[in-house]
Length: 378
Image (cartoon, rainbow, N blue to C red; front, side, top):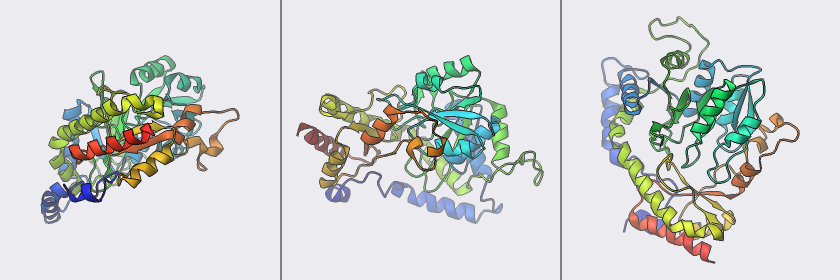
């Protein structure tokens, strides 16, 4: 039995990169002592972008400083600006709204599907106005949004489609990877994501070479890479670190196996938890189609009690987004009279995530499932 099994099971392990420590130190020395002294946007970044594009079948991949900055870059590349509206989910991470506001546009919140917790296309359509310029659904926890429906909605109304696929790298729906259903999507490489790294970073992925070209320019103060200090657009500093690029290239071949382990753990959980729905513990939709298993999230009637029960058995859990976005002080001023998001409010009260990272042993996974089932039996 390992030390972790004896002392408890963290929600995210502190030793995520222990197995790669020697390689990280080697790369640090190699890049730090290299003759070019190129620490950002060098050869390693270009190679990572190329390898990801080949793996995904994307026209372009542009590495940037975070998933959040990636959203801003994409929206800017699509010409989103003042007086425009972007429909976003009412439940999710703050950048869904703040990235839109950063460009002077207005996020319009739509409700979510009560089970998948992703944006509801029918409710999104009700929020479309003459000022709407884009739809930005987000993949949530372990489920991809209904992208075929959103793609059809975007076509029907002449809107741009952006995917917040920050948590969904590795997810595939109808043969198409997450991030490539819309005109562009983003991935986040922050430590705890499925392709996380020991630092901050992300990538924009797109099927449109022109969007890729524009995003590449915007991430580096509007320069095109050929002429330094010639600024074609007002851009940002959203550049990528060479050491992190080299480290991500080292870890990329192992990503499919790590994703497969996440899916294996999730399948076991779902099998164990499916009978608990009538007892107030609802697992996410089963299967691997349109799934990513960044985290595994239950909908629980007595969330605080289950979290306490898990903690009493040394198992950490996490309640993401305990307030819907339009209920947050930062975004409440955007709420229009009569606006309501009942499913988002309900998810904010019930969602509880449990460990699903590939480091977990079979014994730990069984222990977590046993404790949840024990709680539901009371």
